[in-house]
Length: 424
Image (cartoon, rainbow, N blue to C red):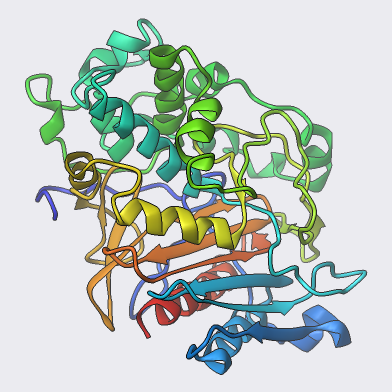
């Protein structure tokens, strides 16, 4: 499964990978500038008397365990969350905890829409691999072949970076979100409110990354052999641009026609330049640096190929199960997707493939496949068994910047909830 080699440290950033937890101790969170933290304050003090928890069981499923795990996430300080597990017979177990809104209370909808953040990358990787299977793309194609002159300057060289390097985060390219959110003084509620309706063009995101030198350049003679790994949202912005250049259609259209429509994912969409999340949903909250209060960050215009999709826990389970079952990719391309390099992705034995990662989990002999995503106010976490028979997906509607310990507590509880839901 794993292509052996050296590993590099990964940055952890908002609008990118989710915070990841270490086994034995919590790992650093993947967020802009600093870690994001959700604290171990009691539910009563954060949520008030309106806090509640509820689980809807699938036949034979452990209703109480999932409800307790959802409560454990809430008790770290999350405003509200929803989780759905699906077993080999296709039966669902759903739980929710906390409140939909800190002021108005109410239940978090079981089928709440939420921003899946970097879980979007798995969708984009599937489209790219379908195009490989069709002969439109090759994993060995370089960025320069498809986007001449785009990756250049400050030592960046698109002729040294392949599509495989992009999808596997082995390109060495700077993470544009590190630069975008590089000044903590600019991460304020006031700046968020001023900019929440302003989308950023993919070309502008790439230009930000090109303002910095790469961490490395893949071997010119064999870029596919590169195994140094560092998470960079820039990679998937470029992948989306290549998909558009190769097909003549926006990446959103290709995701819709190749994945969303065939799987009947009626509650999965890309909002484009819209800042809104469809109803029903819950309020998304972010704690900004230097503040103790939470800001409503539900509105945000950022529909990029690195993290723009909105979905539900049910649709995420359907997607991941179909992917692992071979519904979306031929066997050769699915095997390529699941060929990993060592990665700093939350577990000492984690490996990152093409838009999806693997980790060992007690109770699942072959581990689980996962990704996850963090955005302003929403934390998405999901996992699926390699055969696609059992899966779970969750949305937590609180994130925090500048309090690493508190957010890592939430991340640890969320991953534990997902792992127990899938592996027992």
